Image (tube, rainbow, N blue to C red):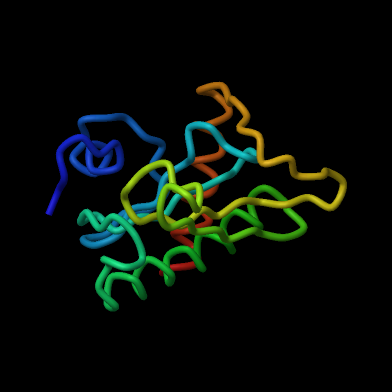
Length: 141
């Protein structure tokens, strides 16, 4: 089930470009185009669920499984000291895209996080997505 006017559904259906690091029949993971830290990944169900209140339990568990693997891959590739896993539900909870998603954000002890979005060049995004995808493949196989 794809929703019109949803940027993440457009990514799933390839109407919008994304740096995809993982994909199976139910779940997709890709680089956040405006990362909090370089290496910031989003994990989504391919079917449209607005938030945690709508997603079915099976897909919820599938998304969390891939978020765990993405966390390991991001940490390994970026050399991060830790990982933030974040998930917002509803506009007042700071959910900006109304398609259930999990943020995987690398953290470095030497940097304070400001939660401000950064920009990344296409070369940086390609390098990060290729390296993290390679790490994901090694973890999942």
